[in-house]
Image (cartoon, rainbow, N blue to C red; front, side, top):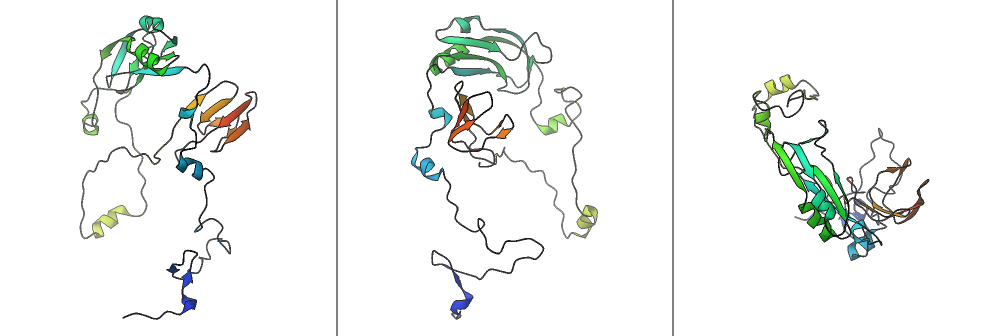
Length: 253
């Protein structure tokens, strides 16, 4: 059975859909008399260019004299780098530079701690040449014991991966009387759950190209200035101008 509602009891928005009348604001909060942002449609300045594909990111920028980098990464989850030979990579066509990141001579920096950890890098005049040169780097590893799951690390008999042990004291945050809550609960369920890695942003591209005029997709602090998403030029002390293109930050910025 349909219920009759008077026109004064219905709020019709700009799309013509009827909604319930707004509730009174909570006096505990300093709400403004009218909303300027919340509950309104805000047009993003970069929206049209992004959805049409006209927006440019640092991946789209091509400057004269650009170099392409390639990082050689460890195939082992835990190992000590015994030696790194860059000679063949440095002789490869188009290579301009090669360097070692995990220095075998540095006891504090000679271990790789996960599969994919950086070991060495090359820079060449084309991306293909950088890839080929990275394949010519020769690395000798001393494979070390590793821990793959939390339960293994907690046994007390797992190999010590970190100095001082694999386990550190955690931080517990509790509110209220948990013991009383469990005691009063009709049922108590205890299980162990695991999820995959979750990132709170779908995209966060990083990149920089150029010298005096810098094209950057980042939101780092430069000379104390916080660079937000924008398009145009921003003066940077002692560094000429910085041209900022589109980016996606970890907070959707």
